[in-house]
Amino acid sequence: LVTEPVPKIPRWTSVWIDLEGGRFYDNYLYYDWTNIDAALFFGEMDKQYIDFIHSKNTEVHATVGFGDIKRLNKKKRKEYIDSWLNLIEKMNLDGISLDYEDGSLLPRSKDNLISLLQETKEAFAETYPEKSLKLTFCINYSPAALNCLTGRCYPLRSMAKILDYMIIMGYDAEQDWWGANTWGHTTDPYYRLKRGLREYIQCLGIPPYKLTLALPWYSWAFKCEEASLQPSIERQPRE
Image: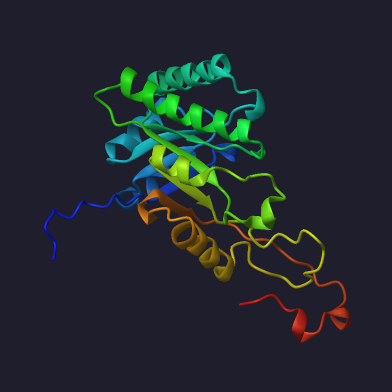
């Protein structure tokens, strides 16, 4: 029995734009912008292209990083937030996507990260009360990837409560860390991405609408050096 109106669940279809090499500038007119909610880019995009994307009713977010999270005190956090607000003003952006490629293992580091996210959202709301600026964060394909050997052990439940959504980097999930896999394989195997989604949603209890799965538009090439030395059938990667 439903006694309350069912809330509309947001849907986010994003595309990452790499400005290196000029391929975006050659092809942006051919994108199906009607199916893209947000375009995320690295570097600094020419404002005329941002205006074009906005004309398609699509948001534009800048993907940025930040320094060592262990040294992210209040003063340093404000410097980062001010720089992001300046970028938003300069480029007429709709949000910021954080891509942090380091670890977060110590309790103090995790507290610093949560403070950065919370203070950023508060600054967004205070500076641009008329806009619904988005704050997103790039996360690993699995919360348990490599048992945190990468160091990316984030306080994901707390992050999800603050962020608009988190972007699961569903690529390079089949990296051969120990040299055991001598078979050619996909960069985003289905079984690993499915397991990662299950861990985020079922194990951690993160709502699906707080997650966007990023899939690659590339693959890797493999050279067959010696056919007779291919491993036994038991060593093939899982399907």
